[in-house]
Amino acid sequence: MFRALLGQSILKRAVDRELLQVSLLQLRDFAEDRHQRVDDAPFGGGPGMVLKADVLQRAVQQAHNSLAAPGRVVYLTPQGKRFDQQDAKRLAGLPHLILVCGHYEGVDERFVASMVDEEFSLGDFVLTGGEIPAMAIIDAVARLLPGVLGDQESFTGDSFYQGLLDYPHYTRPAFWQPDGRETPITVPAVLLSGHHGNVHDWRRRQALLRTLLRRPDWLAQANLSKAEKRLMELLADELDRHDPTPADGTNWKDQQK
Image (cartoon, rainbow, N blue to C red):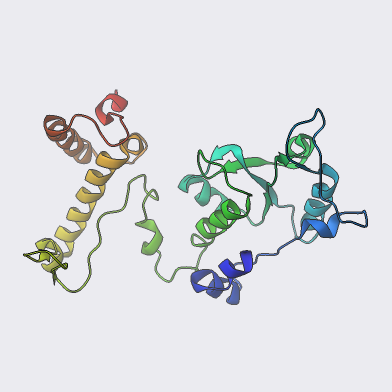
């Protein structure tokens, strides 16, 4: 699974240019019985199997030993904190990460208590294992490393990077008529004007409006100027007159109080 992710596109180029290094450890290589068992039945009974603390310890210790300095151990589990862009930026500043993929019913809690530095989840849902969350974290962190993306603005404008959702994007053709539509859909005129200042202002307003509509909870954390806060109040008042309930049920003005 991981080789497919690391063998394509941006991550492949990052690995080829040695901007990113990912080593994969197979837990079965650290089992000591002839059947290479990495799990066992839970004490107290119940369904499923639990990953063994001793096997996980040997694997993580091997990972530590291969690094110039100890890595931060991250366990992927539904019980973890929801991973977000701020976490990605913080982890991108660390020299080494050791990602432990949960599986089955979970892992022996003694391993978590003694060797894990922090726990992350992708959201309020359950996956078969921690491999997909680990790959998501690798992708989110890697693209923030210096040199991985050719243009720094490629990620500084991303949704959540500055506490706002991204603004709408358009490309050629300027006039596009989908099948079954009588009139074409045009690109906003400001984007065709060539006036960089107006384009910048339009994009900032669109990002604010989209965040207000879809994720008003993020606006409380965004670094807004006084003018932008005033604009948000005007937009919120106008939206209240048409549709008083935002997409997620929150109210940005109430949050500011």
